[in-house]
Length: 292
Ligand SMILES: [Zn+2]
View 1 (cartoon, rainbow, N blue to C red):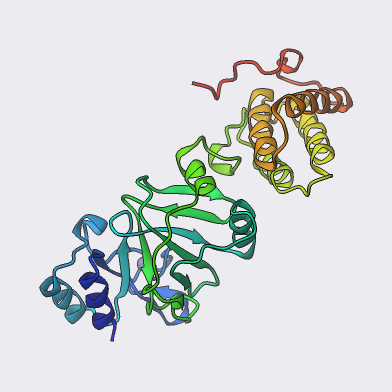
View 2: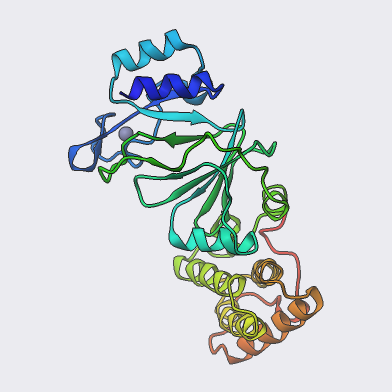
């Protein structure tokens, strides 16, 4: 019974909230024809702010919606690394020196994983790593035995009766630090989808390049993006900033990264055949309209 699970979480001090449940055919109990988050958004009007550990309330909610999925308020007794893909799992493992976190672990019904940690003291962070979001203060996760739109239930891989680890230092630094190279930081001079996708793909290639190929990967990425700068589709300052972050992420030294980006961009710029609308390449990096 969903209500029993919800009550058990509440007894452990985790505020719970009723969440819509997926309906047959991939739809959602909210009834919207095109719900974009079937089975994942709160039942309650005020959403997360109404999350509660009060058993009476919880029984009332699940009395009304017995199949409601269970949302757990993060940032109170636990934070969660929300991993939505194998790529995300690899990225997290890579960040943590080859080890996955040893604490409670959920297999999400959608093929992802939730790794639980003691609260790190931060809010949510989307795209912490490619395929990894952080759910902290002000966030929530869907908990077992909720049902995913795929039909599969969320289930425990490692039950929450083991100790929750603290978020390891590299993870904490990432949560607290500047935004890593992802689409969320993209700021293109012209919001052209192709250029944005190219920038994202290139930064990911650099960020996850194998040791021994990192500098070459960075150089190729800078070259390819330099052509897009020349074509006026990206601005050089944004490309430089994103590639620097990716290079740092890959473990390249700052001076080497800067040098490689500059030469790669210059070469790409020269190879570009269309006249550029931006003349900023010579003095990398310069102000861009994206910088505040
Ligand atoms: Zn819905």
